[in-house]
Structures are given as C-alpha cells and as structure tokens.
Image (cartoon, one colour):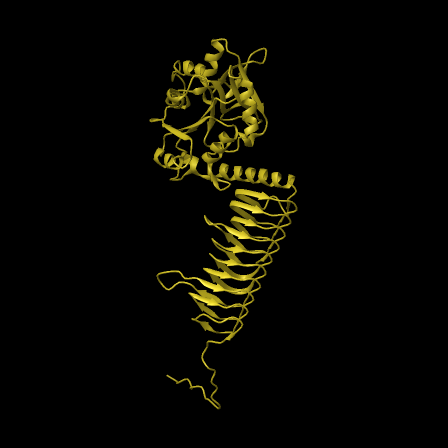
Length: 461
C-alpha cells in the first residue's frame, strides 16, 4: 500500500516519569521513544507521518524539526485520544489509510503493522490486540457470538465481568481515512473520564455495518508503553535482548547477551566476538573476525577485519568518526577520539590517546602517549610518554612524522614540526625544529653530576 498516513499520539503529560523532559523524548537504546516509532513508520513506507503534540509541545516539535518528512499538529487542551485525532483529521487525505500509533510504544515491529494493514485492506477498521493474563488498566475487546469485535470498553467504564476479559486493545489501529473522518464527528465525552475516546469508533463501525477486525498478538513487549522509569528500564532490557538475538542469529558470538548494549546501529561481519559489558553507540561497523574485549565503549567507528580491541578501550568518533584498518591491536585502556584514522597492523596500547590523527600501516604507540593533530608514517615507533604539543593556547598545529622514525620515550614534539624519515629522537627530547631524515636528534639539557654533594638538612623548628 502506498497511501498509508501514520498518526503518532505524543501529546500526553507523562506525569509518572517525574521528569521535566517530555515522556516521548526519553531515550531507549540511545534514541528517543518517539524516534523509534518514526523509524518504524519509515519501514512500512508511510507516505506521511503526522505527530500530535500537546504537553511541552515546543520541545517535541524542536526534535521533529530535524526529521525530514515529519509534520505535527497540536492538541490543546488534551481532551482524550478521540479529541487528538480530531486535530489530525483535517490534514489527512480521504484516499488513504490512517495508521494510529503511540509515541510511547517504541518496540512495535514493522511486520506486525504490515499484518494489521493487510487485515484493514483499505476497507475495514482493524485493531491490534494483545492476549495477556494481566489486562488491568487497559481497554477490553468485546466480541459477539461469532467472535466478531463489537466494542472496546475502557477499564474505568468496564463491568466486573468485562474486566475478566484478557484480550486488550493496544492503542494501535488502521482505518480508512474517509470512514474515520465520519466517525470522529460523532464522538462525545459522556463517560467516566469526561474525555473523547478514539475507541468509540468501534461502536460506530459496528452500527454502520462495517466489520471490525482484530489482529491479536501475544508478544506484550511490542505494545507495552512507557509511563514510569521502571517501565522504561524493562523495555530497555527487552530491546537489548532483541538486538542480541538478531546479532547472534547472524553469527556474532556474545559472551553474555544480558551484558551487552546497542544504543545506535551496530553492523557486524562474520565471526565477530564481543565480550561482556560492551556498549555500542551511534553507527558502528565491525569487520570480519573482530574481537572486542570486556568493558569497551565504542561509538561511531569502522573497525577493520581481524582487529582486536582489548578491554576497557574507549572509542568515540562523534561526528568525524574513527577508522581502524585490518589486523590492528587497540588497548587495553586506550582512547581513540574523533578523527583518529589507523592503518592496518597499527598498535595503540595502554593509556594512549589519539585525536584527529592518522597512523599508517605498522605504526606503534604502545604506552602512555598522546597523539594529537599528527600524521604518523609507516612503521613509526612512538615511545612511552611521548606527546605532541599541538596547542599553543590559541590554535592547533600539526606534527608530521615520516616513515620508520623512532621517537624515544618521554619526548615532546612541539608543533608545527616534521620528523624526517628514518630518523631517531633521543629519549627525553623536546623537539621544536624539523629534523633531517636518517639523523639522530637529541634536544635536552646536558647531564651534570656533582660529586660528594650533600642534601640540605631539615631545620628543626
């Protein structure tokens, strides 16, 4: 179907979140709840997405402004779900099917929605329902003698007998827009809450002789909403379980799926191994045979085949990204910052930080070093304690280290400076001028030893 218009309910207060942030902007798996729903709408190729805002509308609409193809309408005041849809219906086209979703129900799956739309068939009101042993608080599905849907009764309006029904309405429906428009015009608020219920369209459909269909599922996590931090944490666990299963089905080996977090998009090639307590954020690609040690945090990085990331390594490419070649060895306790580009077989060791720098094939910085705003050539050995002094207090400057240079331990390279190919820098040197290729450069104070020197005595006070 090419005429699907998605309407997302996102006007509620979310009082029980006890937060100044709008409920639909709280994050799950690194993305706002509302963002998950918008992305799912994209998977079913909706022709338009309309978000109904209300409480803290300005904050929600500011986020929507960054989403191409997503529009919004406001519901002010908030007088129920039916009233919310009445705000949206004027901008919907009668040739379409309206799919109603909730901005706080982030884990609904695209294939479930496709099944619902197929049931709707642009002719019927189709409801997504859930069979659950704990239906308390939700609208119950009432069925007739032939098991056809006859009504939805809200929990607060239900009789004791109706409350024993275990099939509940999820809040998700698909309905031909021209029918929805007519039914919305007939809503009233004569109920316990004094609100306009969207669920009342069911009784109008029945009265008009339009068959109401239901697609019933038993996976509660798909339709569970977020009203409290406890529910948000529970859905986070469900989401991570889904991500772990997806990756393991593709061949990824996870040491413990329960101790694994994806907060963005993680793509893995074959034979990837991931140890416990690793977090992946933004867009991360792991090449074939990559191994990730325990307790690593990796964001916005492309890691080449055969590379080993040792425990407690932090990689964050932010907007620039981090690129790592094949067969590299990073960590433990290493930090790669935005703009780090490492070639094949590069070694970055413990307590080494790399920022906005490239290291060519076979270069090594194995201990206690800082590489900032530098270009490091092939097979360079960057000694322990070496730093590039790249900032003069106002501007950043670049260090160029040509191939096969050996930089002795505890040296400072004061940028801008170039170290010529094949050269050696003596340990403890402070290099402020370019060095010739193939030379030994020593830039430190002359060592002086004074024989029989006596330390001063400590004076008694």
